[in-house]
Structure formats: structure tokens, C-alpha cells
Image 1 (spheres, rainbow, N blue to C red):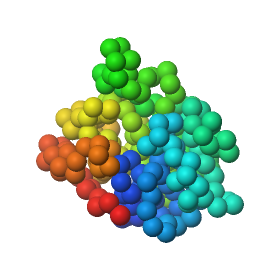
Image 2: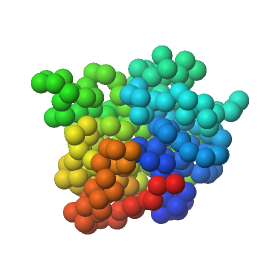
Image 3: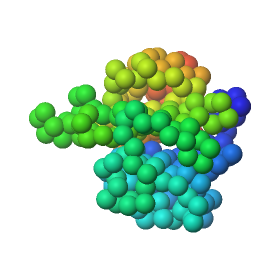
Image 4: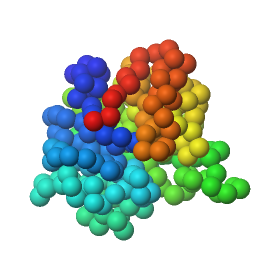
Length: 213
């Protein structure tokens, strides 16, 4: 499959929430979902903060065969989830899933206390779908570990304060060098669509600005 075909199957559900349709239905950090949505084959949760790990939204798209993968800190909210740590590689529903680090370098809730500490075990994911590697970064800054991530499509936060600023996300995209970047972590009162547009202008590479569904 071509990376553009994968992006055509990708639906932005607001903030960091996405759904990928086919060959299995995958949700990333479902939150504040609206309307009737397809049942998930696989749900991936990056970390335990309420706007990323929402049991009621996971339940909304889950059925008897749904598999849930989450970082260890989300297990209290999602007891049935398969817990992963950065560096883990598993295959679920025929999809290769790699958990990668996600953390802050210089975004602090109080002096010296990051919103997303490195030792908290928060994750992003690299999944392989029909030969295309998609990187869902989760809540992170531009971290050194990105230099080791191989991806064709990158979903990157751009809103600043809790995650990368637009400029930092541009630097991250240049480190990752994917075919296509999809800006995220905007909307729901956290960042504006304008940040996605500014990213596209500054980056200059292939950017897909998805419309919220």
C-alpha cells in the first residue's frame, strides 16, 4: 500500500483521536467520540491522562473481539488492556505494533516536573499496515529517540504547552523524514487548526491537514 492510501483511510476524530479503517479498524486515543462509529478491532492508548485514556470512549467502540493495548499506567482504567512499555514489539490482530517513548524535555507543570516525564512509561506507537509504517507520537517533545524511528506516515502534536510547538514539530518531522506528516493535538480547547496550517507552511514537506469528523 502507498502511504497516501493509508492516509486516505485515516479519520481525525479531534485532539489526538484517530481511526484507521482497513484491513482492521484501529482507534488511537479515542476521546469525546461523537455519533455511531465502526467497532474497533484494535484500540491503542498512549498514556493515562483523561484526554487520551477514556474508558467510556473505549467502551463505545469496543465489542467482544476488540483488543486493547495501552501503556502500563493506563491498566487501572482499562484492566483488560495488554500493557506495553517503550521498546515492546507485539503483533495484535495481524498488526505489528511497536511501543516507543513519548515524553517532555522542556514542558513543565511546575519547576522541574514535566507534564509527561520520561520515567512515566508513556508511549507512542509505530504500526505496520500492509507494509506502511505509521508513527503515532502521543504526547511528546522532539526527543532523541525519534532519530531511530523509521516511518512512512507521522502523526505529530503541534500545539505547544503540553507537547511540541509548531517549530519543534517541524524539527521532529525533519528528523523522522516520513513521506507524509499529519498534525494533531489541536482542537478541544488545546491548540487551534491554525497551528496545523502553520506547520505545513514551515515544514514544506508533504502534510495532510485532516478535517475533524
